[in-house]
Image (cartoon, rainbow, N blue to C red; front, side, top):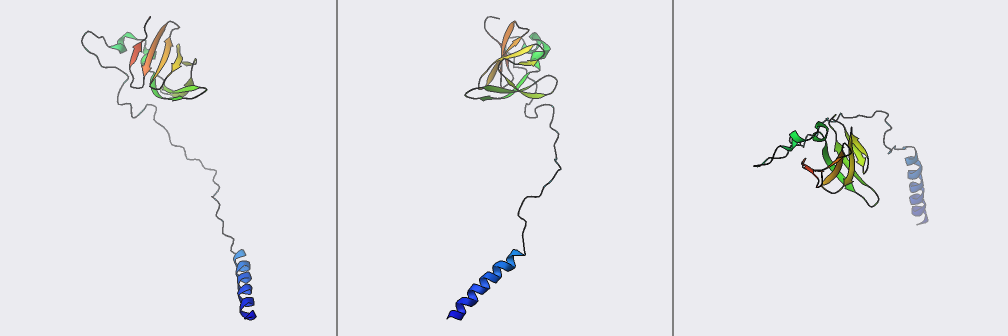
Length: 142
């Protein structure tokens, strides 16, 4: 009886020692190569230019604004407890993250950020709302 227990213990210890020689490397391979994919300059999901539909008696908004504001496209917003940020595409094709009271492009300043729209000031005079659908709406009092 004692002999069987000793054999089991000896076999277990021998197995543990034997398995020590087969050190299996389970760590991830170190790689210095970073594969970067080039992103498109314009939003592929935009579906067209940021021009609103026109109805009777309403003029095309794109023709009445400065060319810089027509190229501004709101991609998305993040509303936080301390800071609100907006992901905005500019006329030169870049997409950046902006906070409130920052200059977006040229003479366009970001004033306010909400869930579906941003408020911008053009030429330090006129204020406009740009919604996520690409509509540019002049604010009251312009």
